[in-house]
Length: 279
Image 1 (cartoon, helix red, strand yellow):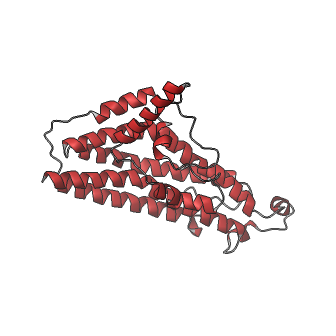
Image 2 (image 1 turned 90 degrees about the horizontal axis):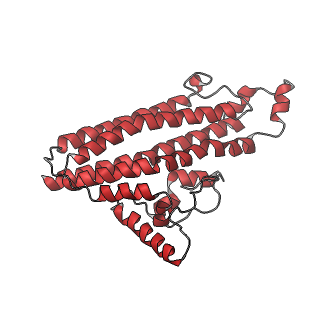
Image 3 (image 1 turned 45 degrees about the horizontal axis):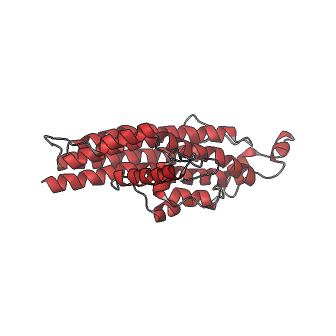
């Protein structure tokens, strides 16, 4: 996902000279092939993901996203990352492998429970009775800063809720088969390498929302408020500009939750396959 102001850095494999251009091509292909499809994203899903579509509809994206997955991925890996990826790709576990279908079922239930809990939290935070409370939307103001802080706090909750389960899924996959252990090692490397990139990408969303906030806020809103000729409570009434903005903000958070769940669902699918093939 490339959002305004968060494009990936220049390719760190891009050494000057013709021979080094060939080396960059080899590295790009090597990074893509070593992913073994675990984290591959189709061009269609990249351009049509719910979160990206919403950002596009709100005109918060800068142009069309890049479509070459291998090229984008290679830009994120430096020499130490490729060494770690090489080691993970060559990882061969000898067992014994004890994870079974009961483990998969338990983790599947935990993933569903975690998603439901996070979803309920996002829903509850936007309920009218939570307005102005510690866990709810800020009281109506014409300043965007409280809404940015609110969004960032919800993002932290998503991270805290999902990361421990991802670690558990990797552990079960490592205990399922030699191939599963290799996939778990690859996910560990990808997780560590892409964390900063994902943090920048997701972290750009609340900053970009400032533009949407200002676009929806009527001209002279702050002046009317200072002159006591406006009532902030009306902004949150159905049809009000702030009611619309917070609705859009909630949709983005819900889409972000689904995007953050994708790696965990991939690990769970891999666990199902490895347990099924072994038994």
